[in-house]
Amino acid sequence: APTLRLVSVLVRSPEALARDLDTFAGVGRCITTMAAATGAAFGALPPSALPPTRKLLAVGYCACVQMCVGFILRVRTGHESALPFYLLHIVLPFLASFLAAHAASRSSVGQNVARRGYSMRLACDEC
Image 1 (cartoon, rainbow, N blue to C red):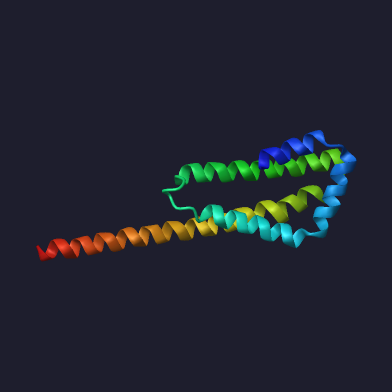
Image 2 (spheres, helix red, strand yellow):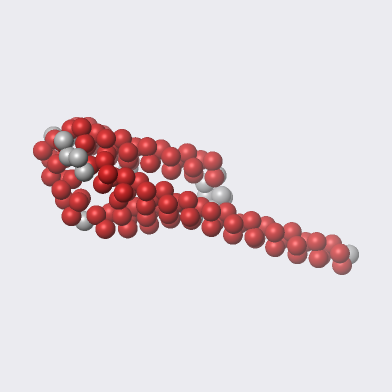
């Protein structure tokens, strides 16, 4: 989806982009909530679903593409608010919620492994 957004920004007319940016500015809270929810859902994926290194690479790619979209919008439309809007309403909420969920999921995985190790030691002590 980020790549499609980048292509869309490159091929659409500056007038259409300016209209979209004005529309997005009107629903900034909704976009912020969506970006935060997406980041949290992605960050909470267990390592069995996606290895942590690949997950971090994908998140870095998404953040870079969204910043590129902000830069391109600023250049093509002349809107001074394009880059700050993308940074404050999309990139930062996405990254913050991703990192919080990723850290929480890693600590819960670590606690589960520690519990399993402790119960195994108890079982071995009884032998």
